[in-house]
Structures are given as structure tokens and as C-alpha cells.
Image (tube, rainbow, N blue to C red):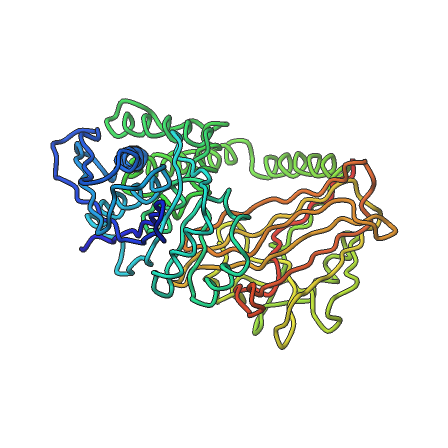
Length: 476
């Protein structure tokens, strides 16, 4: 398999800059773990340092995920003048070039990754930090990149991109991909890795060590309790991301869960199933009663949404929870509960987390869209869960810009939250959005506005409006 080149964007005093493909060549090495040497010929000291840092950060992940099991020598090559380059904005490019070289040694299906151009500084934890001159870098990318390329840049620079340049990128079918961590950039390349937060990473390390011991017969399975539940949740959150480096962890967790389930069945038979079920229902009812005193949870997954269009009106279901849909814009639009199969036939939303979603639609499609949810009685705080998105096709997945505004009884804004339009070639996790007035005022209504158009006013996002998986009303 050929190695994918990662384009680097170079700017130097007195020049207009240059975009050049960067490749990495890796030696076979001897068994072990460690980056032995990084080579980059005829380059400035700054760029050589950037190459070392990018290779170091990439190697840490590649060893961690078991894509690498040998000592490593990396030789970078770029068809460009590298003497007069300063700064470290190429860290991310060097890291991706090494990842591309490693990916070429593994089999991940027949799909070719998109053309990537990258810029960004990496810190010691693999976070992608902001750079100076992002507008000039994007201008270079727009000049040199072919259509359907991906411009990978620091998430912290997202607000620095000129609106006209973003519009040009949309017209040229160039995807803007802001990333906060190196793992996100690897996934854009098509290399499966898991971005674990600090707590997840500690758990993963513990499970990796325990699974190794279990495979040698030196350790029992995970006992039922908090540790097994934490392992189950980690497994479920990243079910699509596990790779060859986790080949022992997955069966270790699955075997532990199977044993727990068998013991539950035996316990039910020993204690008497009717009594056990009754006790379980009583405990659940008590929990629901206490939780319901201060929280109204409106989830849409337990509703029948039959074909042929797999959508139903949202109004009747919301009314059961004291929520009324008002002020649709345009008036002929519909606020609906849609099944996952109605959204690109199930190939756009991560069905592991939920199957139905609250959204808005209109025929023919137009934008912007908006609707208001009125609460009776008013509530102290509102939480919205945007659905997890699945980039199942080569074109990735996109979500419209949307904003939720909390209103008092007079229609005065109290709090806002939401997100800009985004696109991704990898899994986009679900995300909570909280709206709590700073002055303690009560929320009488919530306005949700969406816009699926690009900067030039053309339809772009795959959905007309935000996909809401769950609403929570916090009363006290």
C-alpha cells in the first residue's frame, strides 16, 4: 500500500508561502518500543525541532495503540525549500505524516483517505494548540489543494478564519476540520485510535494490564461492581474504535460481563424470580420518584416511530411532559420525532446511543428554521443532548449550526448555548448543552434555531435542524 502524503503549509519572510506534500519513511527496526532517530535534511533548526516533536507525539499514540512494536527510525521528505522556515506550526503535519506511513503497513479496508493538509503546534499531551497566521495558511490551502481535501487546523483558531475564505472553501468542497487533540486528526486520516480523557486513560491502562494477566491465567475476571460497570461504559462508548492494540481488553470485558449475567440469573432462580423482580421494580420506582421531584427527563428513544417515513409529530409526546411547541418559523415547518432509519437510512447517527431524535423539517427545504418550547411550570435550568453522529460514508457527516436561547415569561433572553456548523470524517460524540440563567431567573420557554446553509447561503449540512436526543428540565 502506498504512503499517503500530508500537505504542509510553509510561510517565510518575503515569500507568498508554499504548500508541499510531506512523506515519512520508516525503517523496520528491532523489536521494542522507542523512537530512535528522526531525520529531515536541508531544513532550518526550527523545522527539524518540529519534526522531532511531531514524530514523538505520534509515536506515543502509535505505541500505545499497538500499531508499533519495534524501535523506530523516521526519515521525512518534502519537495520544498525548508531553510528559511521558523516556528513550530508544522508539528501536526509531521505527526500525521508518520501516522500515514504506519497506516500504510496495516489493512483498514479499500477506502482511500481524503487529501489532508495540516497545521498546528502540539504540546506534550498531544493537544493541538493555536498558531499565528491561520488566515494565510488557509489561503495557501485554497490555492494549492484539489477539491474534497481536508484542512486540519487547531480548534482554538476556528474563530480566526475569515468568512470569505470559509465560503471559498465550501465552494471548492474543501472541508475545514478543527481538532483539539492529535487523536482526532489521526481519525481523519482513517487510523482508528481512541481519544481517552485522563480518567478513561487510567482505566484503559488498568484494564490493559489486567487483561494481559488474565490471558496468562494469572488473574480472575472483573467482579461485579463499580469497576466492571466502568469497564462496560468505556467499552460501549468506544465500541467502534477498539483496534488490534486492545485485542485482549475486549474479550476480558466481554467475558466478565457474561459471567456477571450468568450469576444474576442463578441468583434470581435461588431467591425466587417473582420476589427478585418485585424488589427490583420497587427500588427503581423509588429512584424514579426521588429523581422526578427535581428533574423532568424527556427522552425520545422509547417511542414507536413507524414507517414508511419513520417520523411522527412531536407535539403530543411533549405535552405529556408539560412542554408545548409554539412559534414555528416558518409556520408550515414541522417539529418531529424522527427515527434513525429516516436519517440517511441509519448511516448518519450513532445508533448505539439512541434511535429517535427531536428535530425540525420543512418541504421544500429552506433555512433558517426555529421553534419554541414553552414549559408549564417554568424551570430553573435546561439541558439538551445533541445526538452522536456517525461518519459512515466517504463524504463524512455534517450538522447544521444551531442555538438554543432560554427565555423568561416576557420573552427576554436569559441564557444561550449551541454550536457552529461542523463536519467530520470520524465519529462525533454526543454532547450536552446547559442553559442556566446567571441571575437565578426561571426559564419559561426555550427557542431552538437552526441553519444548515454555508456562508454563501447554499444548503450544506446533512440535516435541516439540530438533532436533540434528550431534554432535561431541572426544577430545583
